[in-house]
Image (tube, rainbow, N blue to C red; front, side, top):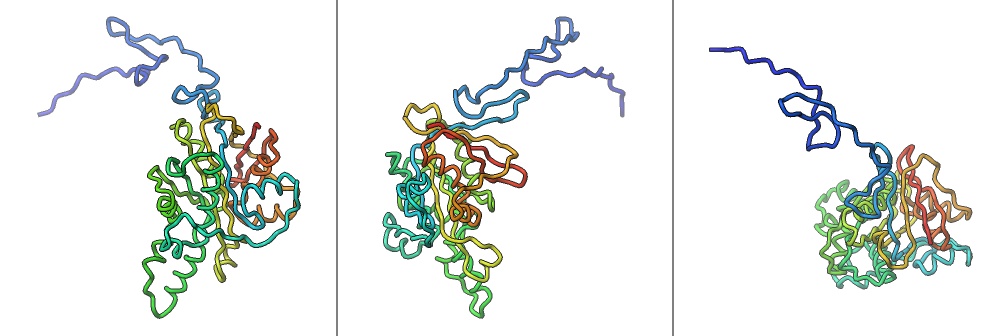
Amino acid sequence: RHERRRAVPRREWRPLGGQRSGVRRKRGGSYERRRAVPRREWRPLGGQRSGVRRKRGGSPMRLEARIEGIGLVGPGLANWREGRLLLAAQSTYVPRPTVVPAPDALPATERRRAGKSVNVSLAAGLEAASAAGRSPRDLVTIFASSSGDGENCHWICETLASNDRAISPTRFHNSVHNAPAGYWGIATGAMRPADCLGAFDASFGAGLLEAMTRLVVEPAQPVLVIAYDAPYPEPLHTARAIADSFAVALLLASASDSKAAPRLTLEFCHERGEVLEDAALERMRGEIPAARSLPLLTLLARKSSGHAVIDYLDGLSLRVGTMA
């Protein structure tokens, strides 16, 4: 049996969650429109004084942090101490192949298994933590790489193309994108979260963006971002040419931290990426995705306030600023 329900008149609209503006119910069941509350120009998330600032309309505007430590390994760049002098134009840059550091922090068995990607990322990360005077085991880490371990990928492809297609468990275990994070945990005893990102040529920018966003959520937890790349052997090198191994690490803390350290800001823009004055360094920036960090490192090496534009996604760049 069916019966017709009483039609319910449509309401104009009613805000969810008790918003400050909109339509409210008066006594007796009728509705009236509330006075709209003007929007603030910006509001920090979570009541923090630093982090993501909101423009009118609520769109994210800027991220802020402090840089407590830096690590660097690359072609002609043994560490940040040496790289800082080169980037500040206090010494002449001479291109030469990357000297991959031995992973002394790893046990002997893992040292034998670790490849270039693991070794350079560990070296840069440990240097940044040491410079900041922080224990590596207490840091949240973000690893970012465009391609991961190229040599290991080449070996697996070569094995699959042969008559004996049995893949070594060790090779397979090293082939995953989060292998450096696993070795980092073994080397340092770290139990904090470790994320691994891949965004092709935009991987450094993606890692930096992720790290600074985490500081908005947990301002009291320092974050170490490590961007690294290593070359493929031929024939994969022809398809994906990465000139040499490179790793950069930045240890970031909340901008509200009272510790004396350079302040870093990040926002999106549509400008073209920065071009370095030194032709050899500019070639490195263009040939190694993680080396897109060089314009920012140059600002930090010169200990000057300013900004640099880092290539990110197509049609979108990152405008990073430093305040000494």
